[in-house]
Length: 448
Image 1: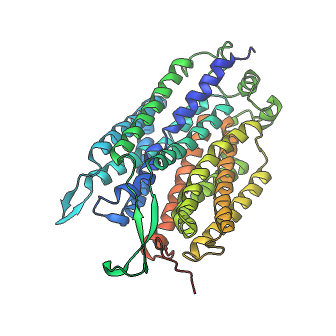
Image 2 (image 1 turned 180 degrees about the vertical axis):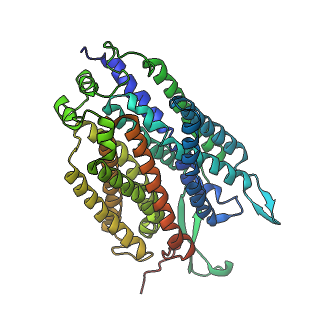
Image 3 (image 1 turned 30 degrees about the vertical axis):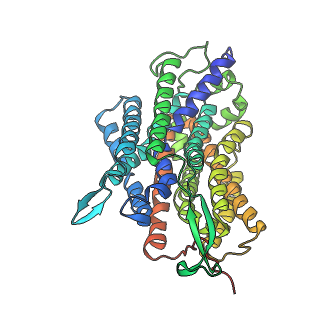
């Protein structure tokens, strides 16, 4: 079978990555913009707890997608994908205009517009994992890795945009106490204004989601329809069970055909993938990985990093987001297909996560606070933890790809269920019982 033209192959990888970028960009963008919007919204710093609940409730999107599949059998993924993308674009566009509008509820002011639109965007993002992933069953496995690279960009690009905005710029100034002219005996935190407003931030986010939707339309134009016969000219055709080995030969970025043939050895690949003990272990590992990366660890990131300074926190967020795309690039070159190897990597990630949880539990006075070594260790731990779990997620999804659309749908459900359980598990200790304690800007709480 002839290999596809290099330009067409690169273009398809680019479109798939941009398509994946739109999956969680909206909710990730809201999270990184919280330090700006809390200054004007009446909920103040209780707003993150509201947002956590709304994102958890956004998993109702899974039920809506399930209902759609029941009522519209055989309609494919295009309609729900377009609905998800439309909700994202319209929601962020309205958020840009209405985020600071306040309305009274039971006699108290609430940011009704912000919270309502955040819930709509959470519905769309949660539904993306069970609509976007099944669509990728029509493409060879390497494009799945490009999709996860794009998902990494959905976290990285809003972080970079927020850093360019100047979120969290702070300087500690010595000022006289009680306005006197005596020696400076107090240290006051001075917050610098952002370079551009939250409204501009949300409009740029809307443009990113529009780019993702345009990339999906470009994919539909570039690839044959799912009902068309396989073609030999592009190598980017829609797959059917039993043809994956031939497709592996068509793409220069694929693994050797023998490896794939060893995986798809059953006459019924879908049943083999979905109902074997191996696939159950893979789905369970995928759920646990996403519970940690999307629920447990993000809830304590500020507690583990901020004692070392805002620079450490920003470096951990941005470089941790960079680790996701880098892990996807690594998976394109070297893909671990061993269950024992993936379990070993998971153990490494859990050890790093345990270290970060320990730092959060000891906040605001963790070990090596106030030293450069402490900053390096916490940032490096976040980067390695994020990269390890991202690689595991890509590797497992690539292995499940041979099971076709049902296997990728199961992977999407595992990702969402794991993320939901992780978020629900961390809500009581962080928002109700206040197990983790935060420090104060410009105040040394660890001195003698």
